[in-house]
Length: 511
Image (spheres, rainbow, N blue to C red):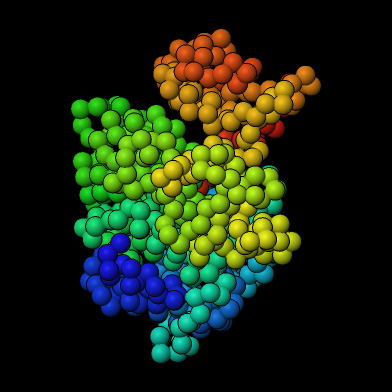
C-alpha cells in the first residue's frame, strides 16, 4: 500500500476519508456512469448539500435511515451524505420485497426510508406505504438539497455503530449486522492492500451497492484515488459496451461473474471482449481451480479471489503477485490486522494444514447483531467470530476453504467435503456449474447428490458417466454421488449470484 493510501486508511470516520481524498485530488473522477462523471471534490461538495437537505427533512445524527436503491451515482451520494450527518444507515438490497424489507424496517426502527419509486417494473414507493414505513422519500434522479452552513459538525467517533447490513436470510429471517465506519474502512483497506491498484486503473461496481461490498469498494477508490464504472443493471453482453467505452482495467464480482465473462469470450475467442482488462477480482462464493485457469487462459488477465461475508467484508484476498498455484487453490492471505484461527468443535486451535472451523478477529469484524442473543452466540470467549466455514491455513499463511459445516456431508459416519466434489465436477466439459448437497437417507445417514447445470449443446449426462469422471479425477469411492439432478439453472441470490443450497435440499429431500 502506498504511503498516501496508508495515511488515508487511518481516517477515523468514513466522512473524514472522503474529505481528505477530496482535498488531495478534487478534480480526479471517482464515479462513472453512462455519460456522467463525478469527481472526488464533487462527491464531497454535493454530499454536503444532500446532507443539509436531509437535515432539513428532520434527519439527525444517530437517526436511522433505511435505503433501498439501485447502483447509481445518487445512491453513493446519499450514503456519503448520511455518513457526513452521522446517521445510522441501513442499506437494503433493491431486489428484496415485503418480507425482507418489512423485517429490516421493523428491526432497525428506521425513521426514514429512501426508495427509487418505480424501478424495473416494481413500485417500491407503493410497497413502502403498504409496509407503513416512516419518512418515505424517493431518491433516484434527484436528492434533497440544502445549505451546508446549517450542518452540525461531522462525526468524529469511528467506532460508533452507524451501519446495519442484512444477511441474506436464506434459511430464516435476515440478521442485522452492526458495522462502524472503522470496520468498513478496515475491510476496504484489506481489499486495497491485496490488489494494490494504480491511480490510472478504472474499476467497476457491477453488484448492488447496497451489498456490503459497496462501501468496501468505495474505500479502495478513496485510498488510491481512481474511479469505477457503476452498473445499475448488469447483464452480458449488454454491459460490455460500458466496459469498453470507459476502458475498465479491473472487473469482477463473484464466481458467477467470471463464468459470464468466459461465456462471452468463448463466442469469439479471437477478440478480447474487454481489451483493457488486466484483472478480475471478487469473492462471495467458492472458486473452482478450473475457473481460475480458464480465466487466465481465455480472458488473458489475472484472477484474484477473496473471502468475505456480511459480518467481515474482507478477510483474505489473492494478490496479483502471488503464485498461480495459490491463486487457483486458495482464498489468499489475510492482512496483518486480521487474525484467523482454525479450531476444532470445542474452539481449540489446530495446526497448519489441518481442517477445522474458521474463526476471525480484527478491526474489520462487525460489532455483532441487532439481536443481542445472536451476538453472544456468534463470538467465542477470546472474541473470535465463529464463521461456520471449514478450512485450513497453509504453511505460507494462505487460507483454503473446504466448505461450510452444513456442507460437510456425513455418509456412513465419514465426512465428505461438498467442495472437493464440486471442483472435480467443474472439470467436466458438459457441466457449466455444480452444487453438491447431502440429503437425508435412512441407510447412510446422508447420501451425496450432485445438482448440475449444462452448457448449451452439451451431451446428456448420466450418473454413471459423472461418477466415472470423478473416479478418473481421483475421488475416493465413498465420496461418489448416489444421485444426479440436471437443472436449467441453479437457484441463486440476487447480489453475488451465490447458489442457494437450502433450496436444493428442500426440493430433493423428498426422495
